[in-house]
Amino acid sequence: MPSPTGPSLPSSHAADIEVDIEVDIDVCGSVPSGLSGRLLGIGRDAFVYSVAFGAGRTVSYRGGRVRTDAVVHHVVPFDGALLAFGDDSPAYELTADLDTLHRVDLAGQGRALAPFPKHDSTTGELHLVALAADGTQEHVIVSAGALTRRSRSIIHLPGRITDLMLTRDRVVFIADGFVGVATRDGEARTTWIPTGGSAPHPVHAHDAGDTVVLLVLVPSLERWTLCVGVGTVERVVLDLTPRRFAHCGSDVGGAPRLLWTSGGETVSQHDLATSRHVHRSLRPHVPGDFVFVPDAARAGEGDDGWLVGFVHDTSDATTELRVFDAADIARPAIATAHIPRRLPSDLRCTWIPFIQRAPTQQ
Image (cartoon, rainbow, N blue to C red; front, side):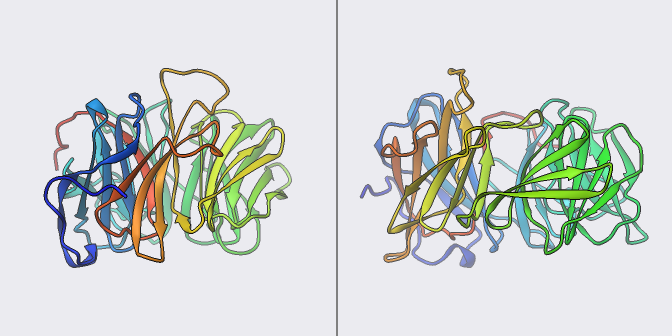
């Protein structure tokens, strides 16, 4: 197993420190030349773990604690900035070295936010759910560049909204036992549809005529067809295998053909058009959150890219980074690198292409 080059890290767990020094790490295999960016993982310890793929196919590791007033759940790139989101707290901007800069008042009036905003790559806008002064929640849309915002109340709330998804024409709000569907044209009306049970983990949403199709983990992979006109949901199980994480290649738009998930001891590819599933065993390792990174140099069926994520060996408490060809996950990993620190297995990961930008103003 390759060892890190440069300075070694302390053996204590990351929860006991504030910042990890940056360390170059050796790679078995070959890092694709088109893989340029950072894989960020954030855990319940509010520590951000970063693996950077730089020019010349170099790979380095760095970590840093997010200093906020809340437990951080998600890190989102927006308008060139790196923003951290937690439960019912403002956003915080991080530097490229993962230091915490300051709060960012995205919703105005210092309002707290739900932890999982969504970025619309088509418009450049960031969609948020903010807590209003009277305890209700509002849908806030922040534009890129000028950082102007517009908001609307979410009426007849059946419970606290924890997440949202975007289609071309609609926004879908996720709450315990309900999903809400509203148009994106500024109307305040939201149709709430009972689903029963706790809030699912939403993966993708798209319009299908008068309905909205929502792909979710519950923890099996399901397709929910939201019949907005009659207020009902049709649920179809796509794969009974329990899953912890899921990503697809498409953003806001039409129905995706391919979806990648991980859970248990497997990483899986799901062809939603043919109902074919490929489960790749990583035993005795346990996979974390694998993200899909498209390859801009290739164009094809939606699987032209890589799966990048962490795997954990529970027997000796070590962590590896692995890169798979997303089109054929049954093949051996293209690249493998040993992380010089044990990472938590529940990290929620985000891929961030390299973009240079000055920090935002407070």
